[in-house]
Length: 462
View 1 (tube, helix red, strand yellow):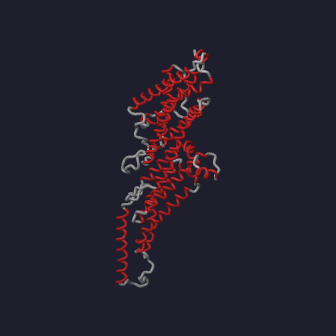
View 2: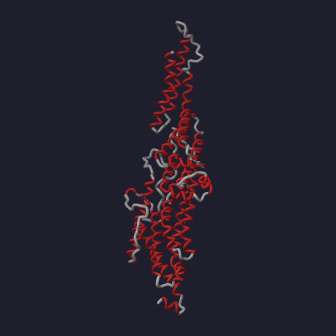
View 3: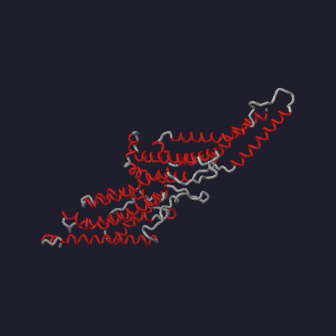
């Protein structure tokens, strides 16, 4: 029939075919989105954002669950499971076999109780894969109906509206991510990286599907990646800028770890699962590539993320030092810096962050150890006034006589009285200090004893 129409100059059927099949494709996607809304109990794009980090800071007294990259893995697993389910649904509704379905690099088994409601990410990925499957169906369907020379133009007619819809959805996700960036809610932006990772996995197969198509069609998928890519770049750089311009002036009165520090380390840990994706994002920045050229490494993506970790932690350190100047008590300022440096070091060591940081800055671990010791020394000066009362230098006492004079006895009594008063004052102040790390706390106690008791015993014995 198609051949007869074409041979008899009735090629308007090409446009009719493209529009009819395009309407069918759009109807399928619309039905899929409606199904997703029904099973998720709300709008496809109506979720509140990523739960991986709380907006800004949470109350330190609330029970916390330490976020981990495992949670992002659960999002991916659930999304991947939905992709496979989408393929099955399309097969059942069309009767066509879409071929072998693989979970790419993901294990489809998951624990539903561990998964948070990231419907926006999941639904979008399902729609992208569904669009790809439908495109494959339409390409196969045209064979034997549409002349090969006209297939690219007809295919563009078929996919244009659906492709525009998917691109618009991607731009909407990017726009919401940018609004989160402007609010400094960077936890919600993390959803960009799982999407980018999955789309990059899909990209080669998608490009094979459209390799003979019009450039308009071929460019659309790339435009989604470009939009999400630029949003990811902005999120990463604005995160550093937010540390530089952080306006929260309130400091913990007990000198404990600042919530800014814990949030920064949680954010960095979340990035580890997407090292390759973020490496590709950062590779577009000339500043990162300059660093990369100066060193020899087999894993460029790890090195790039390592440089980013370095930039974040250097800025965090500058910000914390600046904030600590608000403390009027020099000892409390030292405790604050000590707590935060110790927390950063321990967080680096218990995760894979240290491995990447060492690529960018081989001496980073030694730096933190040195800083911790410097802050310990700064804290220990808070005992200097106390030690002045038990100094045996320049003593007016004649130790060679048989008896002490009244003036000498009064001098000794005053020394002990002043020592006791000073230690009472220090106790009142330092009981308000907090050192949450048990090992660090015990080491300071030990240092205090080693610093003070020998001098006190020498004075007492004398």
